[in-house]
Length: 126
Image (cartoon, rainbow, N blue to C red; front, side):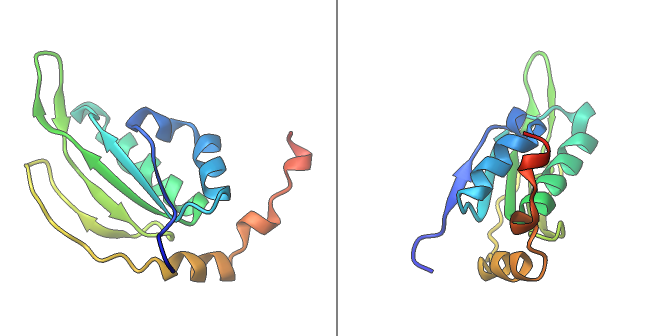
């Protein structure tokens, strides 16, 4: 595959699954999510990222700020999630730098054996 179709959204966007679905329907295979997600909402961060990966059968790369500002503490928990919702890489709440190799062909495999895009019925809800 020459040039991997990818997209980027901001952290608040992961609360809008229809927006990320639209991007995925345009063949996005990786969704990048830079964030400043506060520590008290870390469970939502992890759950929403995994949900967006699973429902869009895409890799999701969530990169969250660590540290604090005068109003918030930020929880890190940067992650790379595969199209089945599994963590490929998971970082903690301290500043870290890691690399990971993504097998972009995994999106084709998952989309092939579970064709949710083809099985959509927008005529029932649009």
